[in-house]
Length: 406
Image: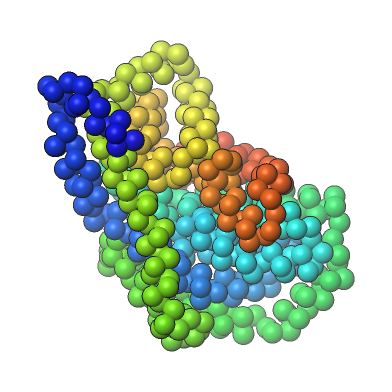
């Protein structure tokens, strides 16, 4: 990608962006205060994942829905929803919730593939519910507000979770459940008492309130809120819950760097590639060609969603946003799509891409944790992905689902 960005200046010495200027743009494109939020959210998410905050969130959600049909699988979806508000990452959500919930669901009589597919697909909620690293990336390369994007992701995230829970209810009704085992586990959970569970999980539940509250109260920018989340995760996991030790921080930091450093190089090259495309007026040409082929607004929006779903299959989320947002945003705006609404649609589509081969990162994480072959897991995930896609269509066609809270 970096090489392709350099080609115009190598072929034509009179190109508007010279090789020297392009290389400088590689570096300057990363000099972004907003982008700094991404590694910070990754770091705090890894701390909280190692600190096993997902266990406490699961107990609280299972307390309310565990006795219902499909209650425990539904509790996994809700746990992913709330853990996404802590980590901001789909893969971290799958890893944290899956390590705890897959063995439990299997112990309660659910099939391994079904249990793993729930966590794998629900992990996509981690990049839709704020704070989301994809929203941060989208805001960095558009004029969108990170705060507005965070707020816009709340209702779509809950809508997707509800659609998946409806499917789980029908699945459990058709396949049946071991109600005796389920109720035995549920009674032991109820015996602890709601107050005890909330007291134990209070600091975990407080995390999204602190992060989002600091942003919307004007106390901190999203990047500063990400730094606050790092400090808060240390305090909670080391000193309050004592689930990690100070000596573990070095390993968590190395793990975060290993995840972010390759992404940093991709962002660098993608930024240069995007700037060359813009200077060559490719977004305008693509927009004209697209709109000449499709004139109806709803057809254009549907085709944009289809393109984004295909992009999500072969690109990771953040590079996909950096490369394709400058190309597709003019098309979306030409048919009247709000920049915030389009950002939510992009994020939801790429969240689906996290569970579709060949680049579905959630598939790889879920396959490893659940010990299910990737292709088998992909097939098991199809019904839940269809529920996810149904919600995506509603989000696309009804802008107020995203814009109502702004």
